[in-house]
Image 1 (cartoon, rainbow, N blue to C red):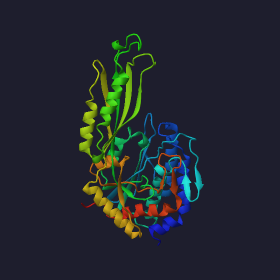
Image 2: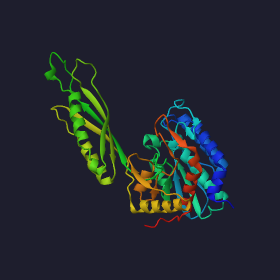
Image 3: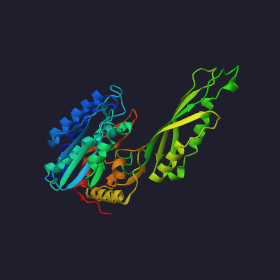
Image 4: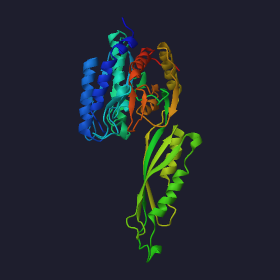
Amino acid sequence: MPTVYDYLQQHASLILSDIKRLVQAESPSLNKVAVNRCGDVLQSIMAERLDVQAQVCPQEKLGNHLLFSVGNGPQVTSILGHFDTVWECGELEMVEKDGRLYGPGVLDMKGGLVQAIWAVRALVQTGALSPHRIQFICPSDEELGSPSSRKWIEQCAADSGRVLVAEPAVARTHEAKIARKGSGRFEVKITGRSAHAGNNPEDGISAIEEMAHQILALHSLNAPQAGTTVNVGLASGGGKINVVADHAVLGVDLRVTNMAEAARVEAAIKDCQPHLAGAQVVVTGGMSRPPMEQTPQNLALFLQAQHAAERLGITLKGKAVGGGSDGNFTSALGIPTLDGLGATGSGIHARDEHIIIDDIPLRAALLAEIILGSGEVVV
């Protein structure tokens, strides 16, 4: 009987074909019709390759979330893989060139999701799945910060012994992602008082001047040594050039490596006070993703993954990264979680987004070998 890697190498063209099918089903997060159409394609691939049907979690405004279960063994592994993208329909063309496949969401993260499907198929076909039950948890809104799927993901993963995230590997180095920053989003609304900028500016309270003070105060919360970044990415205000501005709005992004920093900085942002007499400042928002920290459980799972890589004759390294994923949620629940086990390539959220075609069978085999390791993560 062929090994899992042999099986995947033999079926490399079919794996690539399935990736192309899913990429061609474009799925911008806010387009419910398109996302559900992509979900239908994903269900077709799952039915063809693993003979399973989806448990559909319907959504009113966003795409429906999909849960698939394969096998009935006692060792439960969840595979996380979203199928929404940041690209509008028709914005990017799918192109195969020089050993790479380009296209909307091919790296983030449709390539990794299909690789995971084939990794499990290889286990089924080689008779190695019997002690395992695999859950594919497939949300439709990850690129939006998972507003409708977070609780659903947490509920689906609750009985998992471990969670493997099929997000792309670190670009160029192909490392796994052993830690991710948590993120928060805030809106700061500033109210001043309008007045004529020439005749009686002293009667006004400039919301834009107040905004400038707030930007400086917010950026002072940055703590690079702790991995904390605060960025005012959006700023708008006022109306006409000859009027003292009576309103302004800031959009603030927060990234932290641990929950202690999250609590400290979130409290400071929400406590923003006006600098100008009479100005009003109102802050809304908060943390949207907890950090995925290097917990003992997560590091033990990474060690298992390294042993799996050794069985394939390769070396797997790990890296802490800045962006978040749905794995942040499962890690925060204390479930051993390892990220970056999807496709190799580069260009996440960029127009040259692509995967490396020759790496597809090996990356799928790595995921399969990790599943074959003990379902119990021993710390």
